[in-house]
Amino acid sequence: MPEVTNFAELEVLLDQCQTALSYRFRDIELLAMCLTHASSARTRLHSNERLEFLGDAILGVVVCEALYHRFPESSEGELTRIKSIVVSRVTCATMAARVRLEEFVLVGKGLNHGGHIPSSILAGTFEGLIAGIYLDGGLEAARDFLTPLITPEIESSAATLHEQNFKSLLQHIAQKRFGATPMYRLLDERGPDHSKVFHISVVVAGRVFPAAWGANKKEAEQTAAQHALEELLGENAGEDRTPAPPELRESDVWEVSAEPAAEVAAIDIASSAIEAEPFGLGVEES
Image (cartoon, rainbow, N blue to C red; front, top):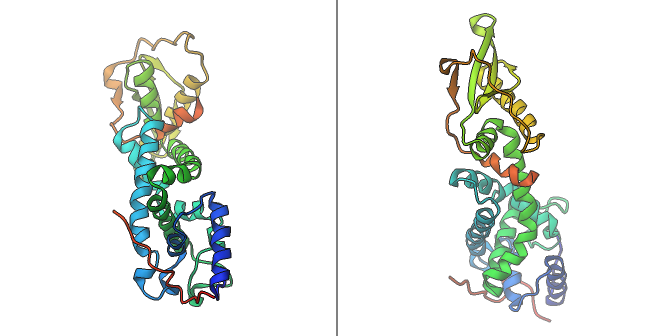
């Protein structure tokens, strides 16, 4: 955290911050307010708290817009799950670190722990900066600033959710490629009632895929779905499909329940004004 004792030092700090952000403010006092935590301001109204409130909303708009265009086949629930990760405090703190925000945020001495600033403060300051850029340059400027920061977070979040739920991803592929819903066939179950294991295979459009064991039906279904995905994604679209065995009966299977699938995003991976008052930092202009 920088130590600013006079106006000249503040000007240097703000100039360095703008270089790190790759954005030049027309209203330099607005940038100063964006960087000012309540612990170092004369009053809370001279801090970035109100900007943080607005920046949270602007971040949500830009992320939602990006998700809407990035994943045209994903449902509202799927997009919402990705958005919740990208706009979280943890992710905001990560993006703040990428623009070296810790070098510029102004906090009181009590919050400067050996030069380290709490991630919650970094996240809030990052949201304040978003609002500042929006007020200074408009929505397009805020979008330009955010796009290179949120894009890798969107991709990472979508991939993480995909890895957590193979069933949802398989359902998406099966419906898109075959117009069919995956069915799960219980082949065997073993062990005492309190410690059973289950052997399950998945059937898609009459094709039976390699079965999997699991400590419960949900775990076995997930692994079976993973086996099916590995085969489907590794094949060319023109390859022949393996027919289902004749003994397969409707009573042997049950449908996958429809559930939100933010994981399907991984398919694409694979293939209002706030008026800025004078600095309010207790810094004398000299």
